[in-house]
Amino acid sequence: MKQIHRHVTRFWSEERSLTAFLILLVVEIFVIAPINVSGPAVRLVNGVIFSMLLVTGLLTMTRRKSLQALLAMFVLLAVSTRWARLVFGMQDLIVLDGILMLLCTIGFLVIVLWQVYREGPVTVHRIQGAVAAYLLLSVTFAVAYSLLEFLRPASFQVSSVLEDFDGRVIRSFYYFSVVTLTTTGYGDITPVSSSARTLVMMETLIGQLYPAILIARLVSLHVETKREKRGEHN
Image (cartoon, rainbow, N blue to C red):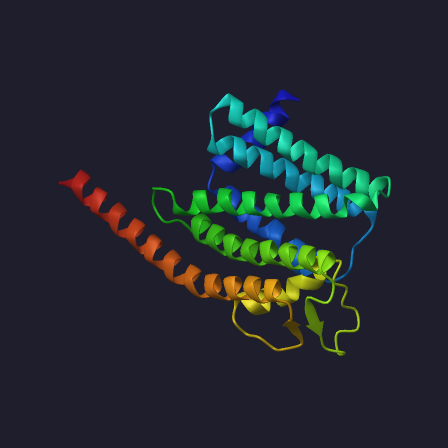
C-alpha cells in the first residue's frame, strides 16, 4: 500500500506526468464524452481517478501540513458529493457537485501550469503539458457553462441541428468550449444572457493570449538554459 502511495505521490514530481495527464484528457474529451459513456460506475471511477491525481498534484505543490490537510478535505468533499449524487441519486447536490468540479478543474489547471512554467529546460513533456493546460481551459469553461445553464436555464440559444444537446450535461458544452477557445465560432450555440456572454468573452480572450504567453515563456526558458550551459563550459 505504501509503495502504491509512493508511486501516486511521485506522479506529479516528474515531467512525464504531463504527458500521461494529456493522454487522460484526450481520452476524456474526445473518446468518453462523445460516445456518451454515462453509466454511474464509469463516471464514479473516472471521478475518483481524477480526484487522486488532483490531490497528489496539490500536495506536490505545497509542503505546509495545514494547507495539505485543507486540500485533502476539499478533494474528499468533492469525491463524497459525486458519490452521493451518482450512487444514491441525491439530485439536490447537483449545484454543489458542479461548483466542486469547477474548483477541481481550476486546481488541475494551476498544477499543470505550475509544471509548465517553472524553471528548467524545455522538454517534450513540458510542451505536451502546455497542450494539456489548453485543453483544461476548455474543460473549465465547459463546466462553468453547464453550471450556468443549470442555474439560469436558456442562457444559451441552441440551433435545432443539435438535437442531442443537453444543457445540464457538461459534455454538451465540451464542443462549444473548444470552438470558443479557438475563436472558431460556428454559431450553432449562442450565449444569450449577460453572464453567458461574459464567460464567452473571457474564454475567447484567454484563447488568444495563452499561446502568445506560452511561446514567450518557453522561448525565455530555452534561452536561459542555453546561457547556463555556456556558462558551465566557460
